[in-house]
Amino acid sequence: MNDIAITSGRMNHGVDPVLHAWTWEIPLYLYLGGLVAGILFFSAFFYLRRREDVFPTAIKTAPLFAPFMLAIGLLALFLDLTHKLYFWRLYTTIRWESPMSWGAWTLMVIFPLSIIWAAFWVKDVFPRWDWKFSFIANTVNYLARFKAYFAWALIAFSAILGMYTGILLSAFNARPFWNTSILGPLFLVSGLSTGAAFILLLSKSPAERHRFSQIDSFLIGTEIFLIIHMFMGFLASTSVHIHAAEMFLGGPYTAVFWTLVVGLGLAVPLFIEIMELRGVKVPVAIPAILVLFGGLMLRFVVVDAGQSSRWLYKFMEQLVF
Amino acid sequence: MRYAMAIDTKRCVGCADCVVACQTENNVPEGYCRDWIVEETIGAFPELQLEIRSERCNHCADSPCVRCCPTGASHYEEGGVVLVNHDECIGCKACIASCPYDARFVHPEGYVDKCTFCIHRVREGKNPACVDVCPTHAMIFGDVDDRNSDISKALRTRKYKTLIPEAGTEPHVFYLL
Image 1 (cartoon, helix red, strand yellow):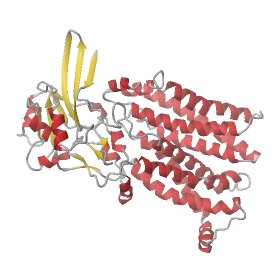
Image 2: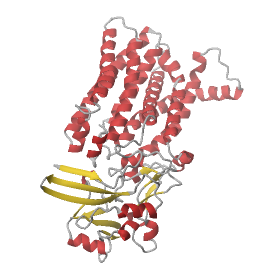
Image 3: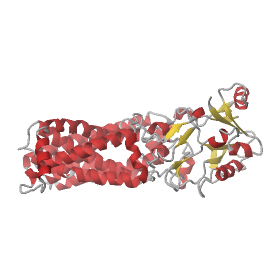
Image 4: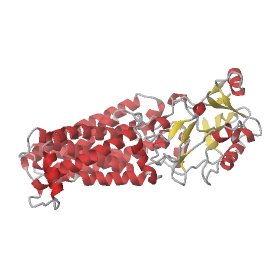
């Protein structure tokens, strides 16, 4: 038996009894960042493959949402800061060791890129669109000459954005549940999958829907594979990592994770999409919305569970769970 | 020069004077603390062992909080002391999440706060406030690079441990056993 107590009454707000450094803002941002990464990746990728006629939603319509989603994500990030007036300090330095630093710089690049990329397609989606000011129209027309370069940059930066949202968490050795390098690829794949689902939701072309159903099914399959791998890795690791995995294998996160994330967010939409590909008529909105919902839940569960897993003072968890 | 602290678990009675001294010296806001007391009972009645520890930031040599800080607000000062520069801290809380000792918290004014080893006192040649008030002289502060310092002698002549060395941060608060 081993009984341990903090007798001087340490109850630091946000830290005790269970860490609550990050609440809704960070998972929402991680979700929107991944979703935007997915949307921009598919748009740029299929643009470079010259599929504008086949995949108009993916290339032209979906990216119009990206800057707005990213703006909401950035607002959430800003709201999370506790020393808000000093946020500009992020941009007075580059710290290579800090994922958050290169995340901040990635956003500094990809946010304007997403606005420019969306501007390229506004006139295709809204034929009567008028830029009002000729210098905006001229700038957009000028930059449009370099569309292919922008597309390549978007592919690179959307991959970085999608990966870094996971790496941001996996860099924290102190939180055993986050401390797995699988989180980077898992969040990237989940971001691409939610991006594909968003395109599915908007698309009206059967050929496009068919292709994105295929892509999404493949991505969901990969995600399930990565999740299984993640738990295998934890269970083969140290006692704190096993303890972290057990939070999902009988512990407090079991129900929410396996029903909302894996069940409703992955398995059910995968099943529906496979049925659809085999010719069964199901409204495409159902799997798409489920995937979008599952991605959001994944971020919330992972951010929350990571903060509940720890090396020291495990007895504190009993105060909560 | 490498500042460190050694805490004698055989002498510590868990009076929490160190906690109060720190709160007074550093104007720690009400409801928060930069150091705290842990009592660990090992065994089953009537065969029991009791270990009492005064815990705080471990001023790790390989600090995850310094590594993950996006602005450089968390940094090493002289002697390896880990400090937070309030004017550079944006309150992103990455360092709080990165600390396996949960030694950091958000100060009500917005920046992240933690034990400083009372560097302002150390620069004047004094001990940290917690060390000076300890009624049982359970705490030793000093330079472990100086062979003649009290802490070096204690670490040479006594067995000691650090907390969760397996977290890999090279903590510099030692517990004498």
